[in-house]
Image 1: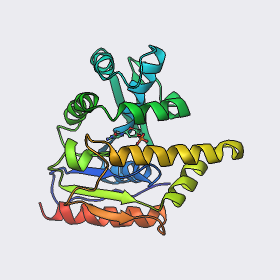
Image 2: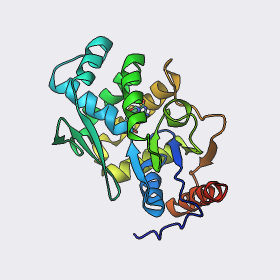
Image 3: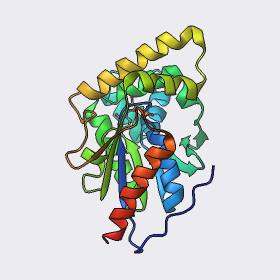
Image 4: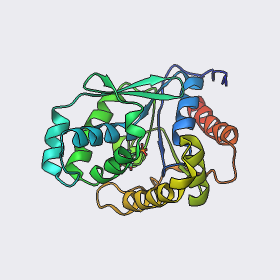
Length: 233
Ligand code: DC
């Protein structure tokens, strides 16, 4: 699929935050918009996933905040934008596929409740996006990581639709579909109710409900918002 580039009116580059729950379509929209704008897209969830993977490998409990922070401090987590998303490197190894598995998905959700783990992540994410021209997606990008982002999108969708999209995307087998759907709901609940940076739309975010929209329609809306911001510079 080829998305023709947007011709900006100025050379200034925006910081764009895309937040929302799992399965709302954030990653796809972020990567397609990044190609159009010639920006870098960074998937912050992959960083939580990479740390969870390392915790599994080192047999560190998802509940041990101090040990997880120490683990993070001794780790190198890199996101490399590639067509359609990010390649994730953990200590130099490509873990892009492994971090999508169910044990890591569950671990990422559990380690992300710890305020000190989040502090470490937010600091790295701010460094990565410091030069602008970045579309970062996650749960707390507009509220915490880049509260001054020029454009904030909160992408939501009906939970049933999000579950269906996730199933199709990850080619989930029928036998485990109900379990995977239940896990997604549980992670949603954890994201929305945790004390530290819960999933919530920033007051100045544009909320887009993608339940009844195609990917192209969502992209068109986000692209129009980006165009408006660029023409204001
Ligand atoms: O977007 P994702 O499903 O890859 O994220 C994995 C987990 O990481 C998710 O359960 C919540 C957490 N996360 C977070 O707390 N803050 C972010 N900015 C991104 C992800």
